[in-house]
Image (cartoon, rainbow, N blue to C red):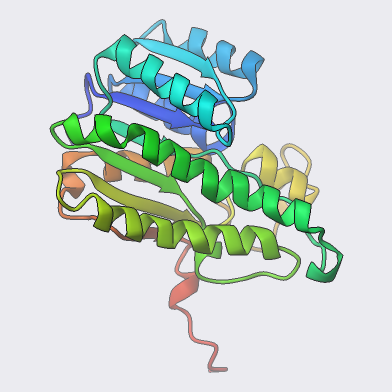
Amino acid sequence: MELGLTGKTVIISGAASGIGRACARAFAEEGANLALIDIDEPAGIALERELAADVPCIFVSADITNEVEVAAAVDSIAGSFGGIDVVIGSAGISGPFGVGFEHISSRDFSRVLEVNVTGQFLLARQTARYLREAKSGNLIFIASDSSFVAAPGMVPYNASKGALLQLTRALSVELSDSAVRVNCLCPSIVDTPMARQDLGIAEGTIELLDFPVQTPEQVAHHVLYLASYCSEPINGTSLVSDFGYLARSAFPA
């Protein structure tokens, strides 16, 4: 299927690892121009070198929660490529994991919201004018099934992903006077370094879990769809990929 992403300029935050890294590779395969943003400079530079062999690709080191750094990164990228067509907000943290909320400090709680929500807001705000100028701008956030359901010991993460879902809806309304679409992807557990660390899972043992886990590449393919002309009618909503968990009734039958 032709997705129409060749030559599109795509910004990916959190691009150095996990879902962001998989998205970078997936968009490179589609022939997009890539701009990678991350705080992990060595990993970001290494990925830039890998992908630049096939497509135009630049890496910009920036803290997604730093307003000045985000502004400078976005303006630099737009200047380098002559505009921005797609923005993928993939940067995120899990914060305290497996900790009761009574034992979570306000500082730790605020930090998760700062990265997972405020950082996405700053990225959206700074890229909005460029996306408005694009023929069909796309803003896609990586949320979670935790936008809808909650697991114990994950209060900051659950709260942040719920807020990100509503931010998606609100921004789609704010940008409804343009051709810009805003959506979010809500996967269940993905095999990423962050998930492995939280779950205490060593490399190569993810298959031992008693629940399904998806790959970053599968998530990246869903992002490609949301960024393509194929999903043109989809706006202001979420795409849940959770193996059907949300559809299941609690009725014991």
